[in-house]
Amino acid sequence: MQQVNVKFKDVRQVEQFVKIIEKFETHFDLGSEQRVVNAKSILGVFALDLTKPLSLSYSSKDTVIIDKIEPFIYRGDEEELQMNTAG
Image (tube, rainbow, N blue to C red; front, top):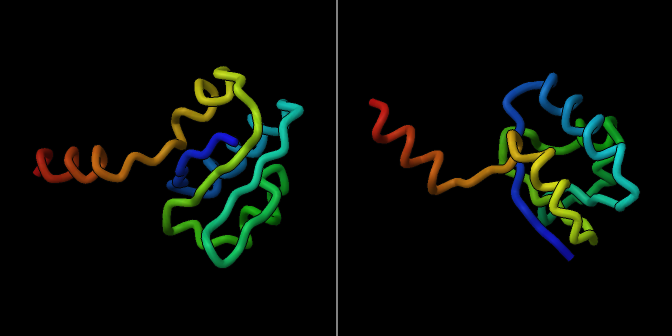
């Protein structure tokens, strides 16, 4: 099982993300501790709290997945560091 954190800036990013993962045969779960949905379901994704990072789990070792979802991967420490050094 692979797991990464993802975060979306806007509705358009959610739509792009779902379109990307729909192309893979693998099942994807997206959510937080309270709620987990099928990440290929755009309605399911919109039912989540998109203001916070979400956990994406999938059972594939296909490295292309990470390459394709790279723009959505959340790396909290790195993003906070960039924000602190930018100002």
